[in-house]
Length: 203
Image (cartoon, rainbow, N blue to C red; front, side):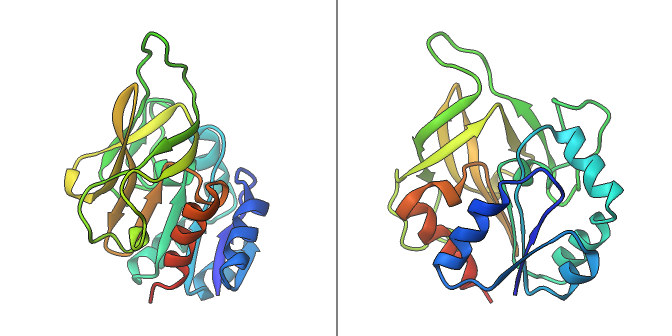
């Protein structure tokens, strides 16, 4: 069973439909006990870093998330859910993230003729062939983005793919059982469904 964490700030319906489309058995929940029982965990997210951390803490979800990661359960953070895996964010000074991955979330730089937020389709430049979520995904496949901030990992070896917009940024990260997608696989049509299918197939 895959737990989709509902803390009031995620695109829950689309994520659930994507998982179900590739035969993923999932449960939308905000109950720590149910998250602890799940085989895999998905943390979606839309909105502000500080608000998200506040809700996770208020609902008592942080210990269940961290425990699942420590028990090597496959974990996928999507968009803001990926950013929450890191230590902190420029968006919310003084607010700590989950700290599962080392690094800071930074704002996309303003550039002439480029709008922030970064919204729409852009490509994934795959960094190496080994990330399980990218199995069967051709280099420079297009996926859907909607964000103003991006994660800057301290360890560049965890970057599974980058995307060029404003500055190049890590669009997919991977460390052991923990995965983060800055894009929205649930909105990325065939490519996104393949990535979701790869996650469902993880042991």
